[in-house]
Image 1 (cartoon, helix red, strand yellow):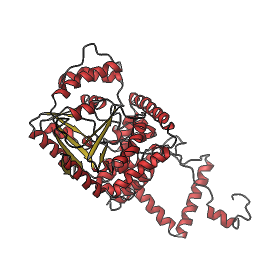
Image 2: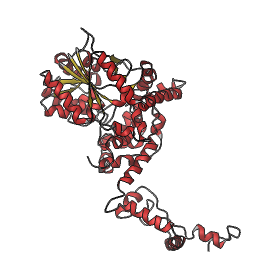
Image 3: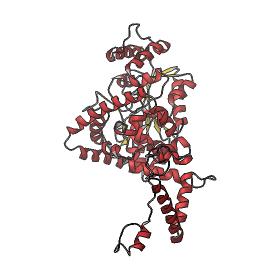
Image 4: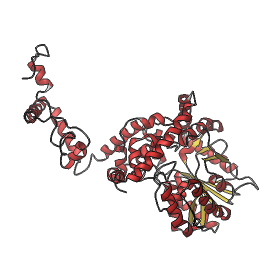
Length: 490
């Protein structure tokens, strides 16, 4: 993927995408605002949710050991995966051990993060997405563009075309008289998926939460596909990020009140599924839990950034972000787009590559994301801290960036009063020349006709660049005896 500015520029030129995004984010935003307004103690609830997640993160090792013991006691098998490669290998090995060439999947950000579908495909195993939006993305050979609504960039006419073109290649085809009415499209998806549910022997899921003291995994969803995956197959494999753990069952209370309101704008999720290991004669008779790190301990070690691990994947920050609303999720180059993706990706992966290093700058720092975050992640502060990390990563570059050169020049001038005075005089001379020709901005400033060439273009393309004042503060101070004898500029 290219760096964010390049990808965003392409997205901004897609008028259909922008129309789809504006409509969808506005609808979800309004629904969320309405149900949040019903809760008188919403801020107290946010504090409680943040407290639950923060307490779990501060003693994460202990809670993970408790979770493992509880899961094993309940009949589950626990696997530990340091990275994406290990996690994918575990799932593939388990699928091969049961002789299957396909699995059904519950919507899971963790499995998308590790590229599980692609890894299984390389092993000859088809991974069928059963969430409606994820299925649309998969059939369209597309990428998700939203955490909650992965196909938010598609309209219903495009979805109908995808169903007609691709469903027959991978299972039950779409009916010949398929229309683009949402209820008709949903019915076609239901019929297509039903045969996959009924024949699947192995299912793969993630988890919204993992309760340490009871060994309980929790999935919340709106369609019922998750319930089908979690109950019908013989074998269930759950890939769970280690940050999903909460200490006790009672800790779920604020989380299950915060999540649906912040994500789908509902008072509660239509389906909340919980399971603890194996129950003879009920549900999957073999349960595996893959506890995934993949950069999470790296993020945990960051004093400022660790709060990003509180994220409950509600997507509220995406729906209020002016940058996301105009560019969509693909520009972020990750399954985690929007404000949370702009901090989570660098924290998990570092800022060593150009694409990831560009993400902390994909924000206006307006603060709307913090205001809606149900677990009070201070995303703007983390963005600024990650920007500092990007700058620090380039300090040893053989060829310094233009910004670094500018800062060094400023430091050289500001470190000596004589050099600063000389720079002020030169600046004032330039200001007098410009004003003599009637200009109030430097050539290339936004108010002027063009932009500065080269490195300056990125700055002046969106900002005014005022002409320097004819007289510096220091010169004015000396001339007026500290402001006591001000008779105007000479």
